[in-house]
Image 1: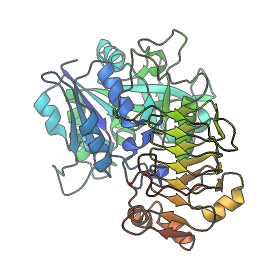
Image 2: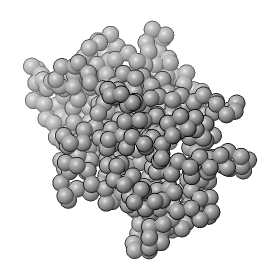
Image 3: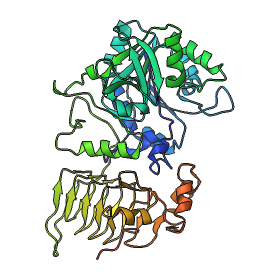
Image 4: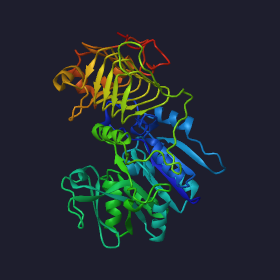
Length: 466
């Protein structure tokens, strides 16, 4: 692997994940209570033996860079995970597409002089023994190998759809087509690109230079680079991800990959983690998903001394440092450093770190970003009309999403932290709905920031108990 360079594209905004991405890049979004999305691709590379990794950042990268600098370090000589911010090296513009992000960093490839380059996205949830894909790429002597996976035909319009011949060579490529081409062997599914590639270095460099000189190009791997290589007769092949075998997984385990590009898909992927038999096994000691290590105490489950019954928890995940004293918790995922008070009921919800839920609150199908507070007795998720009247961010299926640092009172306007309110009011993806709800929210004073935890460590901003 020493002659292979890994590049992770982690500069995307993730507009469909708002309001979770108004202040952070999509790869920095928390996932599974204690991880970030970026942790999965980096764990896959490190577990597969790769030791030279560049992470390319751009949009709202501060949180992502902080996480990487604090938690992702390789120890040996000639080993590194290095953050590469956008630098405008080849013109007065930021990255114009996925291919342009690599083109603007060709100096890294030329300095390393690798035989092959792995280019992976940083915003999917999956396990992948990447060395197995490189083995196939080298054995086929391919110019480009694209990781591919079958998905239901009704979902394929979200991806690049691939047509192959009997030798697994790509003969057609549709980027996010309105009418995806089905697989010949199964018309209910389409073969899609996972956005993960192995390039022969010379082929990659020539393709990027030609693409950069094309004024009509969108400078994207799916839209431009791959279709042109196929058209020009390059040896472009697929790697069948369904054949990937993760060390330590049972023989019957099926490869797991989720594109968490929307709030709905993000919610579902989190919910899959806490199911009795999760499709994504986080307990495999041979394939650890690495992340930050926090010096928090164990999660604590407290029976209230008053009239409330004991804590009843069903199919849920609770992270370190949290104190749980609720009446019931059903099919939920609670991040670290949260406080859920006596008599409350939480169902089908995801709480990021530092959240505080007041006594006798009832929360159903809610995503709370970090450091949110919910007043005692508040009800969310039981009446769709009432939720839509009060809360700006609700998905088509009724999942209510609250931005980082939001305070939700029992009645009346919600309160956004002043730093988040500014971002939400100026982000193109959220400003229209913020105008629509302008009379239904308030903004905190400047002494309260969205980064202030409301969990058990700090009580200054926690809701009052009954």
